[in-house]
Image (tube, rainbow, N blue to C red; front, side):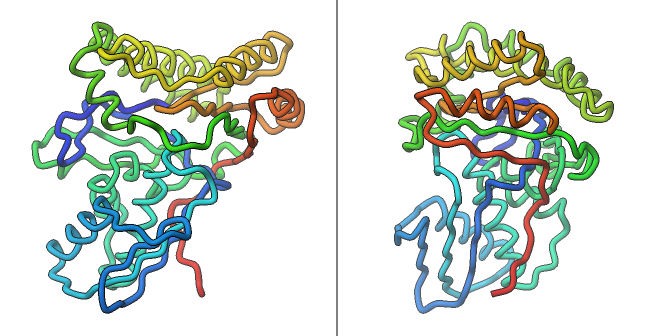
Length: 309
């Protein structure tokens, strides 16, 4: 909802600013871990030699003195690497699964820190509801983790519509795009300096259940973030024609008296927040746009949960 504005330390994934997210219930990752004669990674039904997962698994092994080889099977029910937080979902699920497999009994704070080392935003997905990732102040990242602002039942009426306009993998990852932005965008420092005020407004909006205050803040924050990326050298432009059509439609729907607001991560797909009473009307108008591949609707959800076989 309020995005990460680059990293102070890329290796430890320590951000330059706090960020806030809403954990949702209908987009999820299912991950299983079992013993094996060699490491095997099966991602969305395909075996891969995934260096990112391999390095993350080795991080756990080194930290907790584990030697076993593992078979890790992970699958998303939504497009991967398309700007819909698949890495946040995936690495929080993997950290939780490894904790369960090895009976580490880690606290949520420790899981948040360890999830961050796989994907920064994964540290927020350890919690349900509305969550804030604190950038912290220590160089080792030991105070950079997430806390819950409100649980999933605090604002029962809020909904998120996810409008998929493109489900292919992004050409440039979120991390690479933001790293480039920090280095070259002339607007970057202006955006970073405005985030603290945005954070105050979003925290208050959540606690007050104020859809207008929340929506106006996250929408403007989103536009500021993408403005920094568009002015990067070379430009990082994630939006597509369908992205702009959704933005235009959201503005039209809101002008017609139905409160709804958009936010867009580092990708082309659009998330729209509204309240349950207006959901059906808004959803129907968005899904009638010709560039929409798929619509998904979510309410606030839980963090990682253990599923029996």
